[in-house]
Amino acid sequence: MEIILKYFSDFTSGQLSQFKALEALYKDWNEKINVISRKDIDGLYEKHVLHSLSIAAIFDFQPGTEIIDLGTGGGFPGIPLAIFFPEVKFLLVDSIAKKLKVVEGVATAIGLKNVTLMNTRAEDIKNKKFDFVVSRAVAPLKDLWRWSKPLLKTSTKYEVRNPEIPGRHSPFITHRPGLICLKGGDLTSEIRESGCRPHIIEIAELFPREFFREKYLLFVPR
Image (cartoon, rainbow, N blue to C red; front, side, top):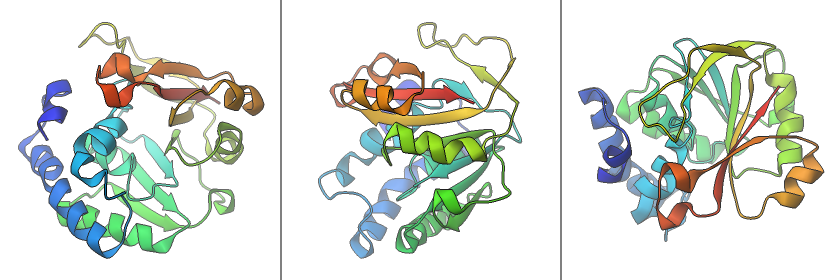
């Protein structure tokens, strides 16, 4: 938990309680339904929670923003982001029902009111539009963009932080919605094959720790 507070502050007591509760909840649920590798469960806050919050280090989602987490798995990045942004609406989607059972159990236990769940595949979602799609290590960028583009609105407003100037914010700007995904490794071929031109941020520049080397945040605007 301390690693979260090293990089973020200004949480309410309720948010702090929610973040603190995650470790025990995930350890308990992971014994019943494995959604986090056993070698990673002890590093939950760095490898899953802080990794998810790299999105919050760059984007200040405004109240009422609608976000879909495709392939949420055990609830990452959706659950940490929903705690961080209590006035933002999150739809967490996964094709595997038992994973959503874990997400539902965690969200209910910590009292998250801004999260809904859907057991489906991305390509089967119809008649819904979102400001942003978020995803973590779910599929190649080519596929993620193909699934995401039909789900995105045509315009939105968001605020972007400059990671080189902590605490400084750019003015609100009107911009296209987009896909925000967390990926690792050499992405050269994957990006080329996708046909996308994403903005790329090295997460190690936000959180200078060994775990985040060669991990990236990609933003593909609509």
